[in-house]
Length: 161
Image 1: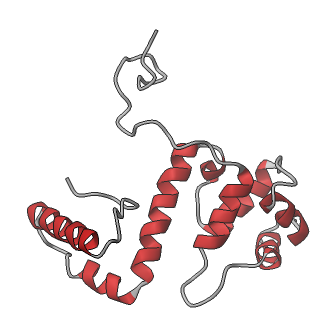
Image 2 (image 1 turned 90 degrees about the vertical axis):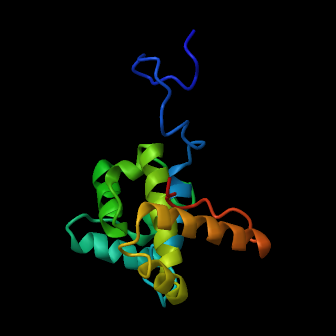
C-alpha cells in the first residue's frame, strides 16, 4: 500500500506541497473572501454590493442567494455563479473546487493584508534588490524579534530558503 504522502499519480514521490489542509465548505470559503478582500480603509463587502457587481457583468444573482451560500444554507450554485463570485473577489474559479488553490490564494491574501499596514509595507519595500542570503538573515531576525515579543510564528506567507 502506498504511503499517504505519495502522489496520486502513483509515482511514489512525496508531494512537495505536503497534504492539503482539511477541506473547507463553500460557505467557509465565501466567508473568508468577504472578510479578507475588501480594499484597505473600508469594511467588508455587503452581499448586495457583490450581487450588484456580478449582475452588472450579466450574471444575474441576488444578494439573498449569496447570503444563503455564505451561510451554508445553499451549497450547490451554478458554475456561472461561482465564476461570477471568483471574478468579483479576484480569485481563480478553482478557489471553490481545489483546496490546494484555496490554500495558496489564502496565503497570498494574508500577505496582502499584512502589506496593507503602511509600516510593514515600508519594511518590505526596503528589501527590494537584496540577495537571498540577506533576505534569509532578515527573515531570521524578524522571527527572533517576534519570538521575543511573544507573537509566535508568523508562518502565513512565503518563506526564504
